[in-house]
Length: 153
Image 1 (cartoon, rainbow, N blue to C red):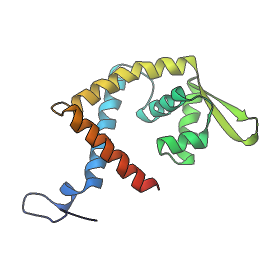
Image 2 (image 1 turned 120 degrees about the horizontal axis):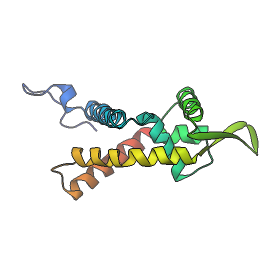
Image 3 (image 1 turned 135 degrees about the vertical axis):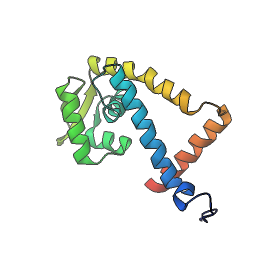
Image 4 (image 1 turned 45 degrees about the vertical axis):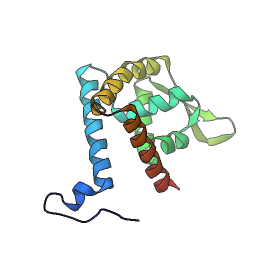
C-alpha cells in the first residue's frame, strides 16, 4: 500500500521514494567505504570485501550461494571471484558432489584483508548513525530487512 507519496512544493516524488532514498544511501555508503579503503592502500573493492565477509562467516560456499548472499548475478560473481583468486584472497575448488559447482574458501591473506577493512566499515557506520539512538538504528535495520524480504520472496 502506498501512503504519503504525494508531491508538494518542497519535495519531489523521488525525495519521498523509499527506493530512491535506499539507493542513494547505498551509493553514498559504497563511496565512503571505497574512499576509506583506497586511503588505507588496501587492494580490495567494497564488493570484493562483501564476498570475503561471507566466506569468512562460512567457508566452502558455492559461487551461487555467495552470489545469492551478496545479491550479485552469476556473471558478476564470477568476475569478482576471478579477481579475488588472482589476488590470493580466495581459493576455488570443485564440489565433490557436483563437478559443475565451484566452492570457495577464504585464504589467510583474504582474512587479513577482510580484517583490515572491517574497522573502516565500522567507523563509517558510526558516522552515518551519528545522532540516532540504538532503537532508531535497530528500527531502520528491521525495516530494511523487511523491505529486502518483500523483494526477495
